[in-house]
Length: 308
Image (cartoon, rainbow, N blue to C red):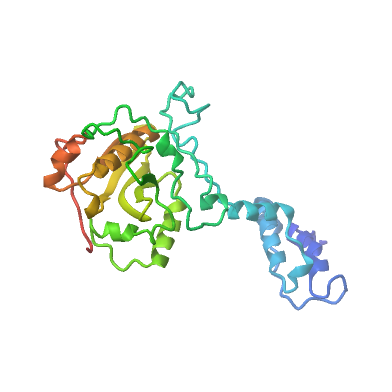
């Protein structure tokens, strides 16, 4: 009975011009896998076609075989980092506090940072962890803290002070030195700081480290971090954690800690978090209560510490 060509035979014939020797008739020394049965290829035609392409790319002289356009497109797609959190809480038409979608899902104003590494731009010393402009859009008319008559806000933090996002160059402005007044920082060099900053910046809309800078001394004198988690529960809601609230020992008693905490709390509400939480010592419970934080009856804060 005459032998009928299988799908593998046909694919192998198509590859012959690309074997060693270009279009010459000289046979290639590259081993060719034995053809599978026609019955096998009837059930796995797509797999065989894909495998043949991989074999073609693995030939000894692969320069004669251009990468298929479809495969090139896939490679480009895999290397492009896309950050699109505009609609993390559902598909919306606009972000204006109105009815945004039929799903009635809470809307968050989270948007990718325009200079974030996810958008392909290089990081500089002035690179921000998040866009500081969002701080100026916060509604401070209902600030929870009593500033003893002073009108303080992100736009007016005090004389010779500016409130903004943490920057990549803040290591040289004493940010880690400030943190050491709160907790053990350890051996964090400029390189370590920048590497951690870059890693955090690659997670847009997650880390909101707010700092107060003394514009005369060029030093960071206060800071707080709001960490935003994206959840599946509560209709894919956002949940915030307030961390690392600290003011410089020389600037305490000037309401800077209150301003930082107020800002982080109002920012959490502005971003659409369904709840915020923080951890504090017993002596600071009364301080945090003035910002609306309270103990959660029936729930306990528990910890498992692996190292200091």
